[in-house]
Image (cartoon, rainbow, N blue to C red):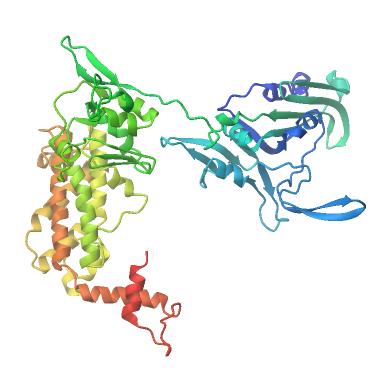
Length: 594
């Protein structure tokens, strides 16, 4: 390294610039760092500080924080000449509290850093253990990373720090200690031994130069000791219930009509500004004014099935919010103007506004009868019906078989069912992905092991490979009528999946495409037709389960019960004085447990 580079490194100008820069609420603030990289050493630590100690801490330009702050300890005091030992929750007699703390196990286990439990609970942070990040979930369902934990560094977003400090009525004191070593002496570098001190805008620091003989091959060093004090927000900005001010409600205008000139007519979705059946706002549009949207408005929610659920006439975000929607159309989605303002968070209203279109046609008859006439009526859309039938099949198998014809989806595959739909656009990618999902649900999930157990060794001879061939053999050998058309459908679906989703499209794809009339229809209609055939197959499986045609129910339940007993015997108390076990009662109790 040349002289200029080494002199620049010892000046620590970039570090000072970072230390002194003005922080924004969205900035991730480093509250812990312990890093040594060659001739550079960085250490940062912090503590929550009572307001009475702010001035003293700010003027301290020496390391004054204990890295074991936060561990309970006994504190010795002398009062009137007598020793008194008190319990200290955080191990600090000055009232300081940890925001982060180092857990040490004397090399018996690995050390690690821990975030203040109070801070985590204050913001109700979710810990993503895979990434070691802490996530804050807002009322609208949006997620923000608040804490980043890395082996040698912890960063926390400033906004959440200051909100926490507001309720605690404390400041955050961050101390920095940066060392830079040089292989040349101060004289060689053209630097003088001594120190510079400065204090402004919540930051104080001291930069010290001196020679360092005897430290490896280094001849000089610079040390930057610094403080930064982070102030609390006003309690009204803390976001904490009971202290924070109510945020101003924001509303969005939606297109509700077109005038005689073809210009769009919009109105605000604020429920309080709309007319209703109680005589309010008589000159405004009614609360139940239909608003129309492109069907693509739902793609955002289908693409995140872990967070959102698109159901028959309902859209949900966990338990945070729910809104009634008219999703019974092929080419659009509708909602009531008042519901958009009452049930959707502001950010979601903006998303819906981006897909808002002038009204064309009416609300669906199904949605109108449900919402206005309070009638119970089934949907006629195959994607919505499919999920209902799938649930019915699960219940039928549970009640009549004791095992599932279609094995439950693994958590990693659940999205295939949750996002199953008739695609909003005529896109090949969407079509291929949906075909893949349907094949996983109906073909890959067939309970091969159970179906295989229904055949004797002699009957298994000549049965082709795969779950479809096995199901066909069971249906044939048990003389179950009506299954051939479903076997044909499954084989075509499997071929379509293999030739389109899993491999490059070629002659095989063109052949199976002809069978599904893919070239003669738009892909949305093709997949709707495939779903109707899938529905017929689900209905067939429900019939099989309820009719007891594919299994011996009593034999299966006995096997299930004794399998449970083989695992549990010796770990349960029968209640009998002679030590016997009532197997029937025990099986019932064990099967009833979640």
